[in-house]
Length: 393
Image 1 (cartoon, rainbow, N blue to C red):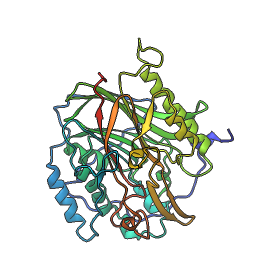
Image 2 (cartoon, rainbow, N blue to C red):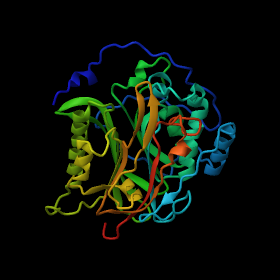
Image 3 (tube, helix red, strand yellow):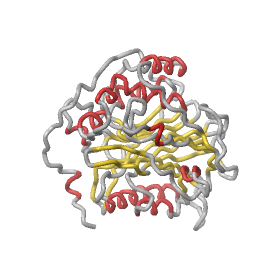
Image 4 (cartoon, rainbow, N blue to C red):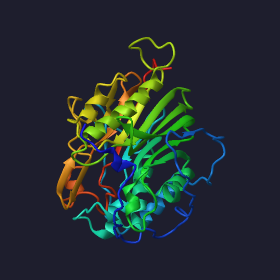
């Protein structure tokens, strides 16, 4: 493998990139801020008393109205329908009893969007954090996932965590050890992966932060692996969120990072007494921006893993075998990029896919692509409804 891993833990100094101010507007919605504790590799987190909320609860409908008021000058967000396997349209925005709704989304780090990513057709005003944060929250409030997996989160402590805590979510954040956001003047700290869960639906059993390795060498990419207990069924499930190395030319590194995550997840699945080839007793979800198209090795690693994983968004295709045409569509100085990089992997033995949120059409996205005034990120959110298979204890 022709890769220099020294780039990821002894980075050379680089000039800061000037950006627009990234603060912007406090309100009762985003008024709280917390300190940013240092994260360590493989840090383990245990739940505290779930009845004690760190922030006062807020009505989701009230927050949604606040978002709509803040965004009243922006165009309406195009409707996206839930599609059931077989092509029929599913239900509306709220998940029904027994369904586990999962959202996967690279939300676009604010420092990167304004300072480094060079979205040449995106008006600078569309990236203004004072409004863009409401567009992100509106998306989350519209679909109300039980499990929320996010990448490129650089406003965890001052925005995502306190706001989602008021909605009843608890979460964990793992920053990148050398985040490119820190190269941007006026940044809000490092970006990383965040995993939130609805504390009314799930109880935390365990959560671990990982710094992914390649050939036993540390890299800059991370993962959060969380084990939850469903309060409705008392069944366990395990959820991982990750964000693999970006850009063309780094395929080997992505494959090595994916292998490292799979090794760890496989070790967790090998519970005592499990027969060879048997079904793990804790079904698995792996969500992430893999920065890899379906033809890459890392995709094939997950598709052929002994964990028996499948990609939920293949259910949008008629034959159930093909990924959507795109999960990201952007125009940079280097040209236009339209590709599928984001995935929700699930245990075939543990879950059934009941519905997935369809992708907006090219016309709905618009000629200037992503991000835009009505799409806050260069990636589209993925949302699917899952249910436990009955034989899983």
